[in-house]
Image 1: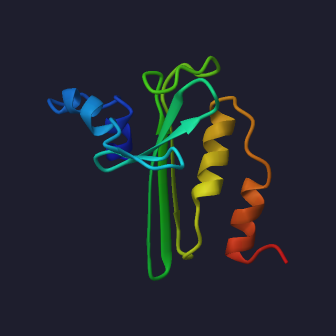
Image 2: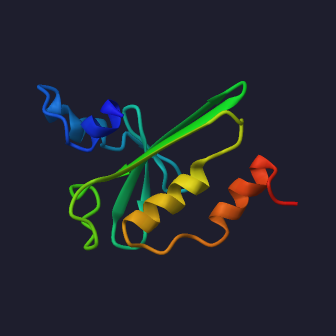
Length: 126
C-alpha cells in the first residue's frame, strides 16, 4: 500500500520528482498500451486520460494494482487520487475487476461484462 500511495503522490519522499519519469511511457504498442518504468499505462476514454497499472501471477496467486491521480486523470467526481489493489489466491486475472472498480470510483461507467469475465475465470459462473 505504501508503493501505491507513493505513486499516487500521497507520500512525502525525496524521490517525489521521479514520479513524472516513472509514469512516462517509454514504449507504446499498436494497441495503445505503453510500458513505463515499473508500470503500464493505458488510455482511458477519449479525453487523453491515462491509467497506470501492473499485474502479476505465480502458482496459486494473482495480483493487480492500478491508479489514477488528478495529475494523471482530472476527473470531476473525485477529490483526490484513486487506487485499487487486488490480490487473490487463485491464478485468475483480476484486471477486469480492477478496471471496473476504478471506473466506478472515478465516476465512469464500467465496461460491460468486465465482472462476468472475472467470475468465469474464477469458476463461479457456469
